[in-house]
Length: 288
Image (tube, rainbow, N blue to C red; front, side, top):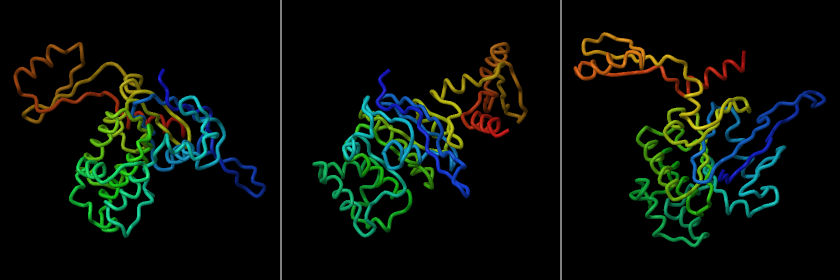
């Protein structure tokens, strides 16, 4: 396995109570193997521990366990860690009263890049007409895209993207997802947190379903869905007249084929599980 990041028994907790003897876990015994060149999803609702896990990877908080990048423990890396990791979060650290171009040039120049590289990235994310706008005047979606560009400028092999499409409109979300795919195509490893299960299915090669600091399931989206698929496969066809016909596949595949050939089927749906339904089932089972 070509793992670039490995997490071993990662736990983050705090103590409460009068004598501070009650332990409350934010993350508990997290084990991850993240392969080079993949988009790896950390999927879960608010409060699941997603951002905390990113803070562990970037050595910003205390934790138990070990994190390795290319086989080297991150504890010993110090500031050199940020040559290998680049974090894009809601708190971007960009200057409100500078223009988009000036903000990005401040960062780009640190890594030997200039206006040409910044302009190309602005064009890729449909922000080329905003380069002279003051950052404070940008919409939420524009700010997200500028933060994403900033994250990409230092050419780190691993990019950590914390909810990059949160609170943006569908059009902006689509632009951001397309840009993430283009980043991957350049050989980068991307660690993506999101609570959007559909987005996770679209983008992620591998993922973990995280809830209350515990991993409920992990693997590729397709393998996870296959694991929880319950036979038989039921196909529901919506007909031109609005009626519904349920067929069992592959037992009734001839009937299904005939309906499609007759061109009287408006839509077809199956009972294949989604990541969302799997997560809800697992989280409910855990809490019961």
